[in-house]
Length: 91
Image (cartoon, rainbow, N blue to C red; front, side, top):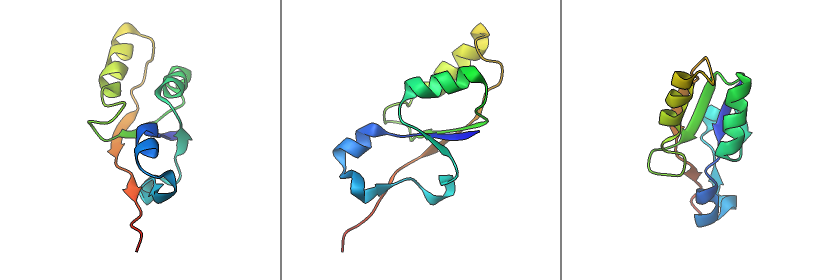
């Protein structure tokens, strides 16, 4: 399963009606918080995980995944990608 973790902070700081995920991730399952993403990782079904760009909430999640692999809690590391919200400009 391909999943994208929503950056809720951006929804709060920018009017959520004016934000959208990048189109190239439109077929990804939306996960609304990092806790749920962790549960999905433990299930072992995530093959690609898209996180908010570095500097936003969740920026250290990749390091956390590495620690989970070292401790044996998960066996496969998903492909990690990053995104930024696209903010629709009002004309």
